[in-house]
Length: 192
Image (cartoon, rainbow, N blue to C red; front, side, top):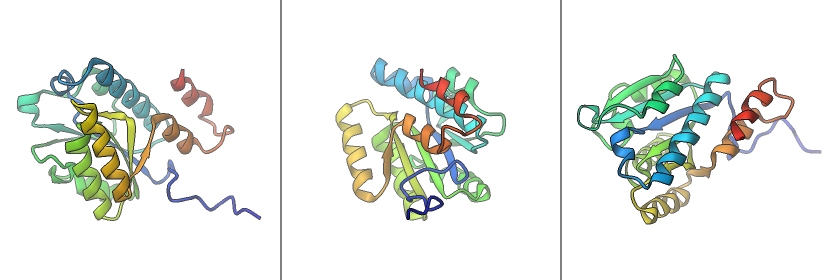
């Protein structure tokens, strides 16, 4: 008999998840291939909508906003009211003042990462969070790098280190767990 209450640690749970959006700033996005920038922005907006609907905490970082500007307008518009934004100069988000404390206060054990660049800020953040004991999930269609080879290398390194590589649809369905979830119709609309 299968125990339906036991969840594999490689599956996300809405009750244990936190979404961390890393440096999706207009000036940085302009250095990415247009299709990659559009995909990361669109999929991150969908994840933000789902997080807000399911009361999943959201943290956001901006790399050196004085020089690189604020988050992309679509991201800023989609941010839940309760989301917190952290400016940083460190490449790892763990170096942003107050971010680790906010993560600890959330009492969440799973951190879902989107943003840029995959081989720099996303990679360093993921590895440091993994070392700190968090289950880390990187959304492969929610991250980008200027070079596709650098993104591929980052995802391979992360996978080897024990980070779970997911896509945004998997995140949504794992957060819902069941088609009978009261928010299923609302969130399934994000897939169209």
